[in-house]
Image 1: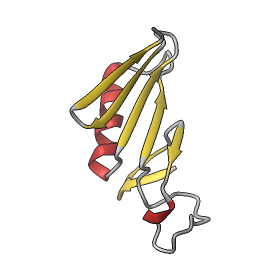
Image 2 (image 1 turned 90 degrees about the horizontal axis):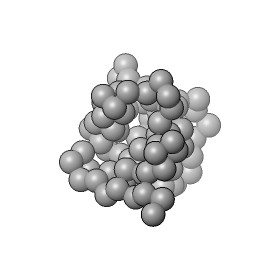
Image 3 (image 1 turned 30 degrees about the vertical axis):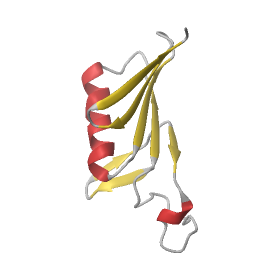
Image 4 (image 1 turned 135 degrees about the vertical axis):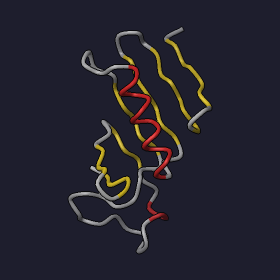
Length: 93
């Protein structure tokens, strides 16, 4: 889990953190990380709506996340977001 701001905790399916962003250069043992991930990966499940995924993406970028992937295994696509408005689409082709 990561705290994106006071009162907002998200649990991406995969999180990547660069150690140089931690004050000591080392990850902490806290249950909830206070630094947003550099790269958050969300895997779309049947219960996720497009609006829900958009909101998650917006929350990550607002907190300082640098890259967000939205992975849809059923459609076999990856949305590679490098900003709140910039996306590359990768397909199985």
